[in-house]
Length: 261
Ligand code: URA
Image (cartoon, protein in one colour):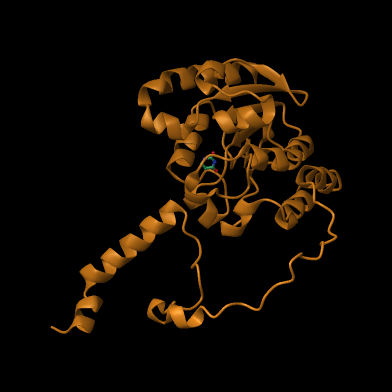
């Protein structure tokens, strides 16, 4: 069997696909160069570049302030649709470049409960909706247990779901403080437009963004007040998938929300 035929054999292309999937999982989103580099030819290409002027002429551009720009763009959005467009047009958050979709929100904007997560993962980035992967399926089951669902038309039984960051961080790394800070004005406007009765913060990142606190295992279950709303920190469903024993406390937190509703 020749080499070409070997490469076409299913076990080869399945292995190649698995390797590609693995790289995507790590956050690889782009090829580094368009054309293959002939490294043997490299020395010939290393002809010295024309000498530059000793001093580069100053570039007179005003330094952008991403937070101030986000505040202005968010304040100018009168509706959720306008806010979605403003976020999509916001140029300063680097992780946007590696994302396939801007993941804005899902569920019923008339819901009494807004669930705030961290950032899209791989499935969410591909689908363009928050919490659709394994953690999202657990989140749906958890809230269904107290009679709430993102597909319910009745605001009393509905959920609205969004994230602190609308773009997937590469390799699912934690959001950087600067990323949270520049997206916070959009988030605050999002909450104001939806105007829920309660906000559930799932995990550390939303606690950082809304309460400026971290330490979810200490914060969980303790009601707080932020942005004029009662907020309830809870452990993230991804954590519950890893630590099933923590589901008992999460259940207590859900019952506490149900009692308030
Ligand atoms: N985890 C989150 O915090 N948000 C999502 O949308 C998916 C996973």
